[in-house]
Amino acid sequence: MAKVSVIGAGNVGASCVEAMLHLNFCSEIVLLDIKEGLSEGKAMDMMQASKQYGSNTQIIGVTNDYSKTADSDVVIITSGIPRKPGMTREELIGVNAKIVTGVSESVLKYSPKAVIMVIANPMDPMTYLTLKKNNLPKTQVVGMGGQLDSSRFTYYLAQALNCPMSDVECMVIGGHGDTTMIPLIRFATYKGIPVTKILSKEECDKVVADTMVGGATLTKLLGTSAWYAPGMSAASMAKSIVMNERRVFPCCCLLEGEYGQEDLCIGVPAILGKGGWEKVIELELDEQEKELFRKSADATRKTADILKETGILS
Ligand code: APR
Image (cartoon, rainbow, N blue to C red; front, top):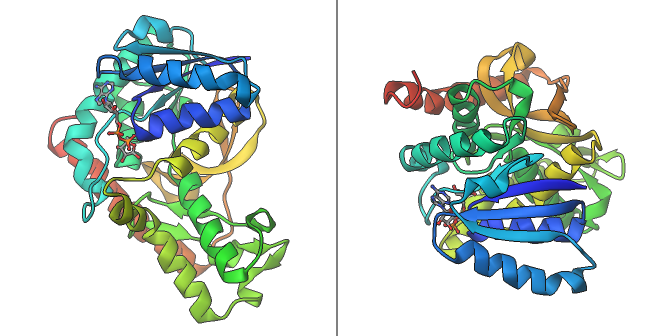
């Protein structure tokens, strides 16, 4: 059984811990926040629910004491500010880069081998920052965004098909941004049947458009960004890593030649198992999809370049 630490006990961090209790694969979860008492309170509340979850996981809440996170197998970074209605994820870069830099250094001091999963936005540049700033092997750092966007794609497809979500298989690749993500409609299936053979072009286009603004739609409704699907997406990825399940997740990895890109962290399908991401899977994209990926890569690189232009990364 594994030890997982979650940094940031806000909406996403706490939901992720709760999702991990449901999945029941950890012996210990440490929840850490900078805000006095918040993690302790949420950890205690969840511990008091755990018997009813059928879980014996120890949840430990701490205020900024990184020694308690020592020897974690996976550390999930959710600390950072969420977007407000009308904001893009990219606008969070300045504040969150400082938080992610400090947090990742503290985490690695006590768990140098932990797989680091980045959720704080803008997630693709924050993944790149974590990797480069700490000089880590590329497979040790993974970003959570594609799995969440794919969950939203699944939801909108199931609504359009009027079918259970369990019968839908689909994937979103590219950047984790409203205009950069690429819901791969041509690869989406309903129990193995391409959805493009069932839905009209207009219906497919609507599903793709709704998926791309899926996060913004929720932010508008909630007044802040969403947490249940982000928490569960991260928990499923952590489980695949620590249990060495080797499941395929669309997630943010450093590309070194794959998909024609160099030195860029962006969403692609990858196998997650012991030690982090094992292998990027190269899909056979058609010309239109390749062009969308190139555009998404350019935009994602432009945001990551802000880290260099502002001296956050040298
Ligand atoms: N160290 C530890 N915790 C911190 C730090 C820090 N340096 N800075 C902020 N935090 C904590 C806050 O105290 C807060 O409890 O991070 C938590 C963030 O929680 P929320 O404000 O509820 O934000 P949340 O919705 O969870 O989103 C977190 O994930 O999806 C992304 O865009 C989202 O970047 C955002 C992140």
